[in-house]
Image 1 (spheres, rainbow, N blue to C red):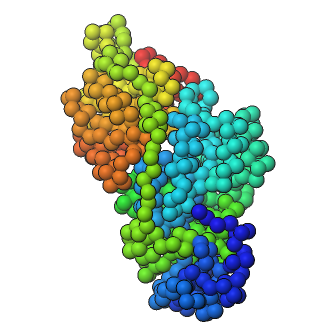
Image 2: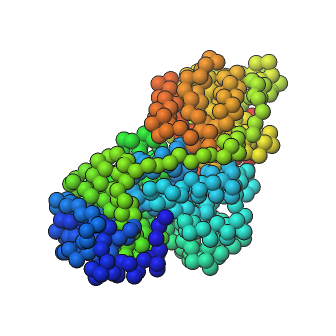
Image 3: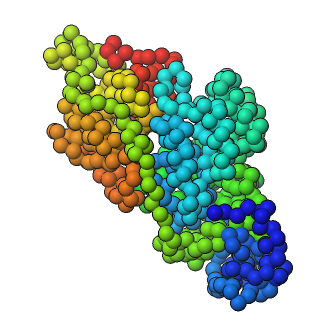
Length: 587
Ligand SMILES: [Fe+2]
């Protein structure tokens, strides 16, 4: 339970004056001051309960018989890191993610649980809020700000205005998550404007997403009270937004890595850094293992020439200043919550000790506190509302012998364009063509159980497998099935119905790889290590079968995502994103 500063001032003041004794004193710290950009040697820090009471050259007056003192031996001591924007409703439960983030020095996570809401509405949001509580990491939430992605085509759940208003009353709900359909703002969509107004009235933060916006559209967006963006992919975009008073979260995560493009010019421009942060926007288990979390952003930025103290400030103080939490968090100073990292050196940026609220939670890369596994209600493990599939469910009918078809041509795992192909028809069913690399692709509503679905064709996938299916897809969470064989497509789909979620690869009737995602069909209740291993097998099995892309799990994830060009498939149909119209699979 976190203390409030208002209720702690007498106690903190008494310890600072020496009238009351501290619980813990750290001596001989080389303090990384994010307030003055300096390293202050031989600093002493006194902590009472979960807050810092004194920072200075001599905390002797705060030490009593019951005070624990630790000599830090001139090691570097700095504030806990924050990830100011990530989707933690991915892959693993918050309790599993916490273990990995904490050993990287990340003590606060600002979560945008958009996919859990798209599957399970306000009930899912509240469930996720519960899962994020009582952990030795701080998890703050925002109400997802982008659902539905497009009212005409999208079919996901969302939160009503009254549910949004009641959500933000919770102390860990800070405002509205990334408003990524920015045209809804520039066109002043009534529900969007109402939502923005009620957030501003309640003094809440609104996170932004302005990919592709500039000049008057960017001005309209910012003047609507949305002051941050994590989409800039180069320094010019960063600068344009900073000049309008925005806060920038430089993204370095599994979706994109932008540090290399931005940091060198940021340094040469000598702009102020006080409105800059790092964010991951979400990390897959392999990236988390191989790169780390926000610690990686600091290492990478320092390698690119940024001063270490500046990178640490961007990873801590600036995040909390943005969220108006600077009185409680962000640096090592009197009154602040004692989220403290100790580093043996500043090269690796791997903390040897991690304190959250004055309690040691990680030491030398291991968690040293108990993280309880919470019970998961059964309703959230039953969200794939589909009946048993048969190969007939994947038939695309034609009376001709050969047909011209429209395809979704994969340029990368994420980027698509409209393609075309000629396909043979057998017994009235249009056949995919392995030789021409043309596949069937299907999207089924699995949230409402409406039986709504669409089937089309996908090009340039390349893998010699029968089917690849996923119940997790941004932010529609349709069941997406890609396949060269109707029978394998049915088998893959049935496995996901039986498991109530996941990713699966099937070839010649056999399961090649499976990642169960039992929680709302979007994350696993298994350990981080098991999820990581299954996730690797999914990608490896498809890549080893000849897929043209290195991260094929992203293909079903992004196929229904209407915020990106150019052709997408959802349970409602195949959509030309630019013209906002449906495309027939057969010409
Ligand atoms: Fe995001």
